[in-house]
Image (cartoon, rainbow, N blue to C red; front, side, top):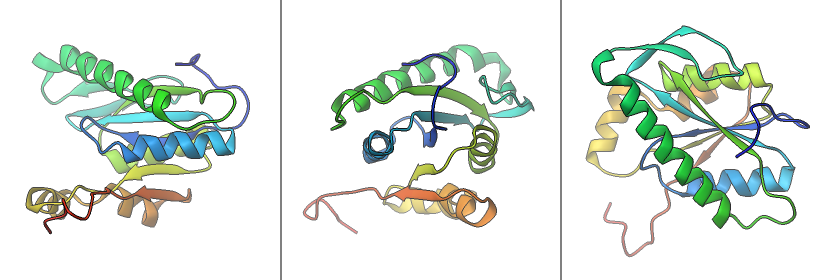
Length: 172
C-alpha cells in the first residue's frame, strides 16, 4: 500500500466490493502499470449515507444500521485490502509496482465513484459488470447498473470489465 496521497499522475479510480469477480482488479492493475498511474480503489458502503465529503480521506458517514457499523466496515475493508494486495501481487506488471489506496465511501455507488473521480482528477473509472444469474439480474433491474449510470451521467471515461466465465461453465 502507499502513502495517503499520490505523487505524479492522477490515479485511476476502481470500484471494488466484497466477492467481486477478480478480473476487475486484475485489469485495473494491468492498465495502471501500463499507464504508470496509481490506483484509487473505492468501496462504497450502501448502508451508509454521506455526511461530509473529503476526497483525501474516507467519507464521513452515518450508518442506516449504527449498532453494527464500525466493526462490520473494519472487517470489510480489512478483507478488501487483502484482496487488493493479492491482486497486485498476481498482476503481470513490469518495473515498479503499482501504488494503491483504498477509500471507503458512503451512499449510492455510482454517484460516490463519480464524485471521487472528479475530486481526484482521475482519467478513468473502472468498474465490473454484474455477475450472471437471475438474482443479479433482478438486483440490477431494481437498483440499476453502476457502470451504466456512470457512462451516462459524468464526464470521465468508464471501463466496464466483464465477468468472464469459461464456456463450459456458462449455463445461461
